[in-house]
Length: 456
View 1 (cartoon, rainbow, N blue to C red):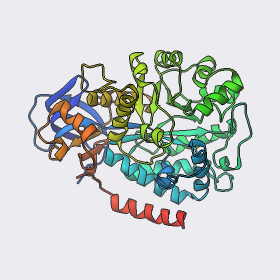
View 2: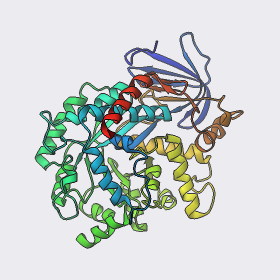
View 3: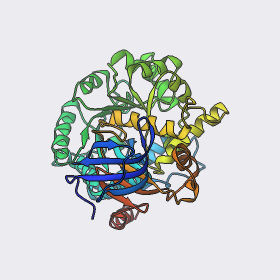
View 4: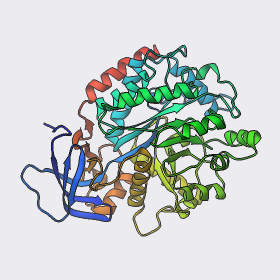
């Protein structure tokens, strides 16, 4: 039986990726879900959970969980000018059908799939706050509570990012009817945050941040007020689409990232999600501020966003992480794979991001883990004080045969598909066994029932 997070758990890994590289015979002790000691070169002891090759769990820094249920339903050609903006209108119509129970069932399915793929914490960029007609629930944090319930049900770590959304375009343009379930004024949003604090008070190791949806959805005055609320992570969509950049220039005479840095004190708490269309000066501004760029390669490819200038950003010393965003496909390895491959296609070279001292896979994995942890409000890696979030790779998987260390990690990220993870541990609890979540059947059953109601 898997112990509760309050019980001490001892692991012994044949090899594990630590901050300074691979080590053998690594004993990891944890208490209340946190790592209390890491010792290499020691034998296993009676009662240890014996594992093979272990790496730290990866943080997913950007998710809209409800969109998992519409994955694959917008892939129809023939619409004139099909783009992110037409996809968004379809998304608005889809979410009109979601009630709290259906929303929770969808979120649980998405979170289960995240754990099975290697994500052990999610930054839920949560903007579905109100009932179908736009009216508030009796508890302003009703839908946020459903996010927390889905995370608790699956065991996924949660950084909740309630989203402020008040306008449909730059300059405070009135919202559209399709946005009615998102909307707050500053005072109402403050009450939402208070409700979220109550919700998360009983959720182990949950983190509360906040998220101005975008420069389109908040005025300068509102953005300043939001930046002063709380001390947690701050995430924002920015410069995802060229139309957004053009509209920002028309409104302010500045590009989105340029405007943000001239009007708000951006620091390492900030995550700039996408930041796809940036200049060399903006790349340097982001890197110098210590903010993290949140890249979502699968979604960005699906929506036709474009490619972030990743190599320039890396050379400037920038920090990054990856997220599953629309959840059209949930796969931690695929996010990193596509991040590298997109740059290879653009630059027409191989292994274009790693500085060369490490394998590409190891460099991507460690950098993405550190960046995500920074803006999810937790410690990263297999080190004292970090969550006891462990992934055990399966050396019997055909793509991992005969490999150790960096080649094994590279083979998972670039050469394997399903089944490469043998087990996933979160806060010292085994949640994925043999590649399957321990509650998969019950979670999927509720998801199927919810989807049947929504699509009827």
